[in-house]
Image 1 (tube, rainbow over the protein chains, first blue to last red):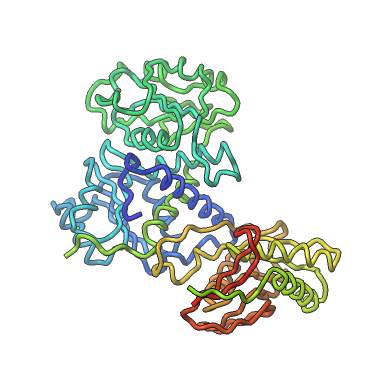
Image 2 (cartoon, rainbow over the protein chains, first blue to last red; image 1 turned 45 degrees about the vertical axis):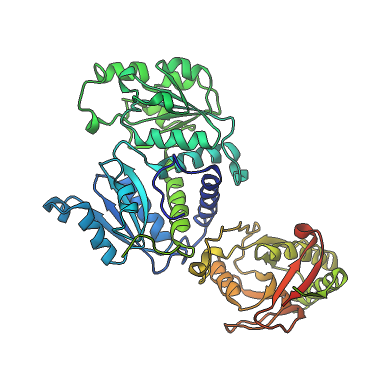
Length: 320
Length: 176
């Protein structure tokens, strides 16, 4: 693997491989000494043009557990706020000898540009770009679903036959997009439940079914229900009348949780808006995987960094 | 490609039986013994050695596997390797006599990685090394404690260990 830019172009074998390596990484995290010498001497730059706490510290933890050096670069308070272009920032990192760049950017496609422009030779990991993709989040979600389903026998398995419902603001959600592609590549049936105002335009070309009625989707007894965060920062229009109405129609409240089959898991990528898209009862119930997702995130990101950086690097393309 | 067979099925079985006796002798019995195979074929060999030692000592022996991929120092010289499973027997390795089991001892670098991997899991009181084939050309100050057979080889030659469980046949061959 040279870069990880999206899950749309990730094939089945590669996806399962990442999840399997993540299993091995997860195993090492239960040892007395959690640090591995694997990426000693490599430098990972976290290049975050958008606010993030959990994704950044998750990548930081993953890189540090593998003994890589980590440089955190947040756009706020940096040269970017003085007007530096993406190109100049990237070339600065190149000059510092970055082996991998983990990038989050508000513009969809920014990681793709970094990876293909020839500005840098480092491997690029997309940590969320605009409303496009957030591939490591989808990988950790798939990992969590597989782990809950198959436990210690997870290795080598995909998600064939499992039914996953994704609920909420699909329009603005890169997490939903990455999950749609990855989960269907892995054989799961994906259903989107979303207010009619928050359905993406091109959804008819996605391998999904779209429902507007949460009750109907939950009545089918899915294997996993993934609640998306209502992203107030991206809501520049009135997509629904008010928060209470959203909660009543599309929120996961205690009553809806109670009616779900016992083995259905409740997922949320965080940060949660408790009382809006997810109730406290749902978030704290034993079927909620919210904290497992955070722990699994470190293992999955270790796997991605390992696959990107550990092996022989193909001829350093594109850099003069 | 000329491949000559240096060990046949009976030779491998005999070598493992002798190693089992030697392990018991050096450990003065089976107390605290943990066999850890290094994937892939070291694990198979450890799984064979375990029952042999059990039948001699009439005591249960803990057998597991120890993957060294993440501790190797030559990762950047090869295409990305997939890590294999590490399976530490219940009871752990603290204060135990750990016998590392591998098929071929060559440069010694896998064993160095294995020692580092052990250090992240616990602190055995003794670590020993059992090897089916020692082909020489060590690059590190590492030596085996129990050897099935010493096979002098040229650096350019390939030593292939094939085992029933994985390859359908039991033999060790050497290829120019």
